[in-house]
Amino acid sequence: MPAAFFILGHVAKTESTLLKEMVTDGHTICNHTYSHKDMSKIKDETTFLNELARLEQEYKKTTGYDISKYYRPPAGQFSKENLQFAKNGGYTTVFWSVAYADWDNNRQPNEKVALAKLMGRLHNGAVILLHPTSKTNAAILETFIQNLKADGYRFGDVHELTIK
Image (cartoon, rainbow, N blue to C red):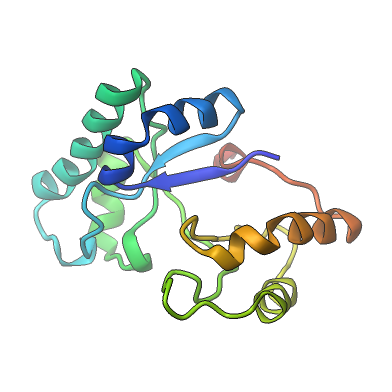
């Protein structure tokens, strides 16, 4: 199934082999900023776009690929101005509609709780956010995917979100 991975600078810098494999496997690599700062506080377009460009450059340098022009603001924090900045930079901003508190590696819910939260929040057209550092996500991913398929869900890719 296709997935979109919104990466940070440290991932682009240190995981070139994995990123290349992900692209080869049909996944989309996207921009989550270089340093995961609160982009909603940036009021200058050049500063905003430089944060995205810094990741683009690092990704290109380490993988040889261009990053896809999708952007996810860290923590979902944005301003109307930021959305325009991203658009001016050629980016489509992508948000999620299903998530749970999986980003804190020191406070992971157990597998049963995590799976119940995700399954209970599903809807047609869902954009599901899962952080790759979560051990719980790694443990439940196969079951979660099987459950979605059994419930008749189809897996699309991020490009489908922008078809007009």
